[in-house]
Length: 410
Image (cartoon, rainbow, N blue to C red):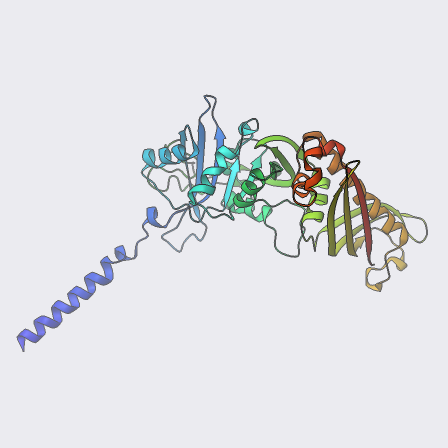
């Protein structure tokens, strides 16, 4: 009987040991559970890469539901070496599998950015769907600033770059896979959203949490250095604007598309359902100038390149079905709920506006030499007999024929 009791007690003790020690008494292992949410890549004055990682650190208490953040930096002659330096000097090796954002700093504008991005495409340390974006300023600065959109600036930026389906598609979307594919294509031209910092006019108080672990700070750290903010310290809050697009030829930044030209590029490359178009100064039924806001319900697009020994022609056809979402008219016959066809003046003004956007977009393409419409690739695939004739001067030789049709209801 005593032997049976002793066996039962030993089994219970062993069970308790397994239950408690298998998960460290329920405590969170910060190094194992922390993840890198974004990586910022800049160039230093001596030509090295500086890689800054923003790390989401889980909380071990229910008192605070917000993610805490740590920020670490490393330097090296390559991006891979900088990441290794980050781990070697801090002792932290957070997971890269959950990194969904790679930011390129303005210091790389005169450098082939593929040297910074290719590492992630070839090593498979991040997902191919990880977004890439270009910063108007330092990429590290984007991760350091405070924003009212989220405690982690990386998550706030992802909200801007990947809007929910059905909302405006006025921001170009580029990931690691598509950027590298465009770079290595015949066109050798690529693009990514250009992020600008806007002042929201507000401020926030820091939580005073200080450094999280392993030499990582709540705001920023240089190669594992520690820093902490005093409780109650106010930080200036900022918002982001990503409606412009940075253009690259052979990996070097050659120019930008403005917000209107970016919208035009999106319209002929992708589905822009839910996107809003502002059309101003359109006469209503009584001839009074009225401002309209149209919502795109459907868009059809087609681009076709034809080549002969005498001419090179690009045909762009864009068809939009829109609905009036709002207007500034006080006339009762302009009511949104009447579902009347769009007025002819509104249709003409919208079509002319979009044609202007597309023409400006093509002018920027010619001026910068960025073949973001892949004209050279179309020439190679479908008009190979004329490829040798136009391959060196196709942007200057191509004639663009733009046709825009707008339909819809008020």
